[in-house]
Amino acid sequence: MKNLTVRLLTAAIAVPLILALLYLCPWWGFASLAGAAMIVAALEFFGMTHAGDRSSQLVGTAITAALFAVLVWTDFGRRSAGLVIVSLVALAPVALVVTLVRPGDVTTSLVRMASLALGPAYVGSSLAAIACIRRLEVPGHHHVGAGLVLLSLMAAWFGDTGGYFAGRGIGGPKLYPTVSPNKTWAGAVGGLAGSGLGAAFAHFVYLPELPLVRGLAVAVVAGALGQIGDLCESLLKRSTGVKDSGGILPGHGGILDRVDALLFVALAVYGAARAGWLGLPL
Image 1 (cartoon, one colour):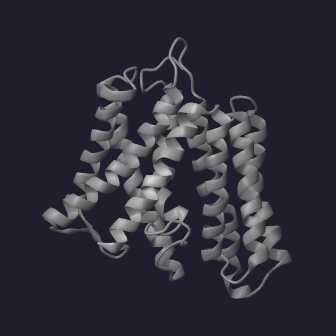
Image 2 (cartoon, helix red, strand yellow):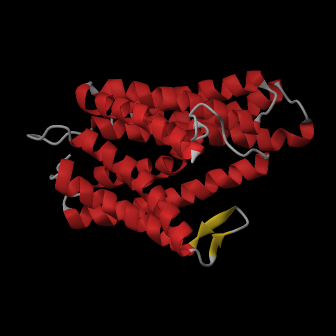
């Protein structure tokens, strides 16, 4: 009960801040928040993969920030596809050279090389997607980009909430006990229902431009990907022997613990919006 109270107090502070930046500030105001979250999440990621090596953690975070900036500035290549391609291709050689300069324990060098290439793509590109969603505009309509960000948040977090209550209330067979012993198939279905509920809420309350059927379909698919993202972060934590990615959010753990599903959901929603699957004239 004490932990639940702390979590609710943290949410009571964070949610109004997020909504204010979404609806009252220019797109770059919310992008700045996404950038701050990206820096903390990257530090948490490299804190797990490069434990005890502060210099490599900072270098990895700097690489992640650079990729984030390129993707946001180019709107995922819409302004300069060549720059995005070069940035992504450069991740591997940069990771190799950084590890060569700081080899540390040579027996773990391959894992650390791979982590330096994976981290920026995993954290930087996903949080860049949520920033770019905020930039989306529909002629004649206000706050569509902000509404799609809120849809992404709700697809991720309603899914997490639906999964929690369905899993606790119904139980049943485990989903993937090797990675996450507490997750069940009932929780997975409840999570998809929660993501769908988030899309329905968006259509009827704050984003009427979103077609209901298309919104439901994209939210359910994005919610499924979000559950995979949750499992991926659980696997990462298990492989590095940590319980939480960090402790910056009282009652919630680290930033990466809170956005693990959102990282996958944001990419799905941004891709669906740009591909025209949401039925919006972007």
